[in-house]
Image (cartoon, rainbow, N blue to C red; front, side, top):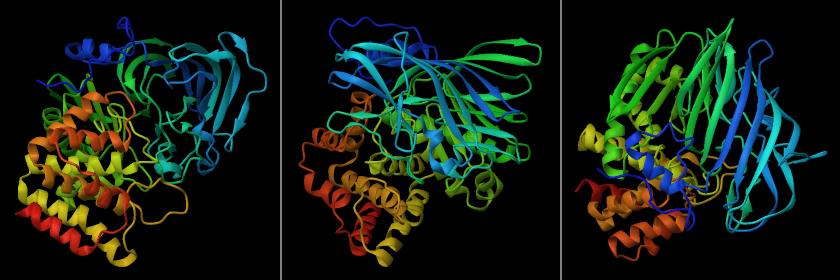
Length: 500
């Protein structure tokens, strides 16, 4: 059985530390620890959900490990609930401390979505610093901002909580700290993997579904305090609800659970079956899923059918369970398989999904076609390719002409979905057709292992395909991902080649 994990240590002489890895299956824990020991930052959160006030907040401690490759005089945190599209939502920080010393008047910027944490002295590469703070996040009601990933749904009483706490900003070797304004239709989160320990106090009657695994709880009066471990994780997301129904299935030691609001149980059961089969296919092709749990949650989204986090998938129940599961079962299955695929591309292997969206969305879309090919058969896979992937892109070509796939997401762009999802997926199909199945899947297996819990760049993915095949793919890569030269005839020729 192959593993997704690299055995490289972060630095010579680093000693593995197993603390905080309880969410990883025992058979993979040693390898995950070896791949990440000494380089992961840690979050310790002790928070309370206040239903009456509409808030979640408490104390947070971040043990930051400087893996940026340069000495630092400051560290940056992102406060995404302050994004303008969240309306009444917001995040306030108080009592900010660095290694126990208070920080007076910390600087906010980028519409208060960036908090600068000044350091009293230069922090060397691989050095650590402890950042402690108190925070309160006001969660907006019926928000459509950023796909509804931070929201209280007044119809169902469901709390959808993503990007709800101060989180370390993403950092790239060439570009430095990524402090871009959040876009209305991008994925806000871009950050490195970390370890999480979370203590959450809330009314005892509420159910909680989170990234990672629960490791204990204490009930006192009408409240319960639940403890969770997650990591290596790029985020810690959770959903809170009072009346979810749950159904589970075990896949190679992984407990896959699907949660549904009343009346959506049939759709949730179908999603569970699809996710379980996708987990098997992807583990065989790209390396084993290492965590003990994978959860699918019925959560009303805005402008998205699904959003994936570490070990947790939001599925838009009203659209998927309320109609698509019955009316278009193959399309429904494709959505679920796509979101499960993000556990490899986006969660395991990180990337700047706003600057290089095609690396995450295009590759995951093609991964879902691999699932369809394996589980539903070639005819169904061909139909999904032609109608769901190539079709929207082909229409975009006819109406708007071509666009570059490797282009950052910015506000004001229009009709980019067919490019990030469609054109990019066709680019990966073109690579598979050029180098053959053996080299194609060997490249992705190696890519998943080498960049597990790290940040990859487009050149890294290209190199994986070239190394596995021994071919120079620069021209092909440029044509599909970096140029705007593709025609309808090019698309049709590729589809004919793939069907042959």
